[in-house]
Image (cartoon, rainbow, N blue to C red; front, side):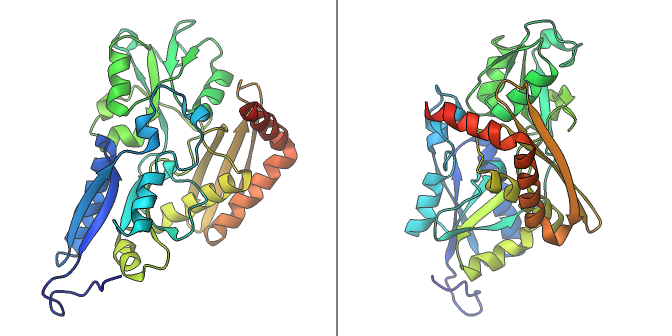
Length: 325
């Protein structure tokens, strides 16, 4: 790779190419990364390259039926492996826990609120999830959210919803849904905090692995790029997310499996709660582990093994058999 020499050494420092999805939220996130790096490294040029991923193109099929291997990442990863770009900015929850050979997770940024949020149609401004009328239609494309909400709110009806954040909000406002569930972090980044009607507590909906954080993926061993990205790394978020990703990786889960997490970091102590649910929400296997933050990945693995022994493996086997059928 060409050297990242400063102008004092080279009159023409190389341009750093950042690859991103084209959605408004993806670009807001990528432009934040670009601007932060430009602020720290004014001697370099940073260029954003955009492309669509399979997850952006296939909008008439639920995520769980498409499969989850690089659904929102593969095209970006191919760009890096070809040498067309230097790193990619992802919502960390979209980044698989097993990355292609030659690529690595180079940086995890400070996390926004990872909670799920309810957004309601204007006719339900006086309601919560608990008080919405029988049969009210809630939109979500997440099996994790679906399973947990079916468990806690069996009086509600649920309907798949796809598209970027603006598309989903438009479908809600047009009356196709009584409410939809979105990540609070995405609404915040798009300056739509006013659309958040209710934040769902962890007791109701454990969030997705990595939700609220950005994951920056780059080529393995690209020390120049890793050095740049280090200024954006947030150690507390990294510890929490590494525990969550290890938990998910050990369970070999993804979009096709209802898996939720919650992490709390208090000083050097990391508390990780994890859940595996059946698709109908009838079974929720849930437990918590606690240990030192510097053993985050080991804690994630330990919790996954604990849930397996408590019945999660039977749920996973049943879901995998259904997916193969």
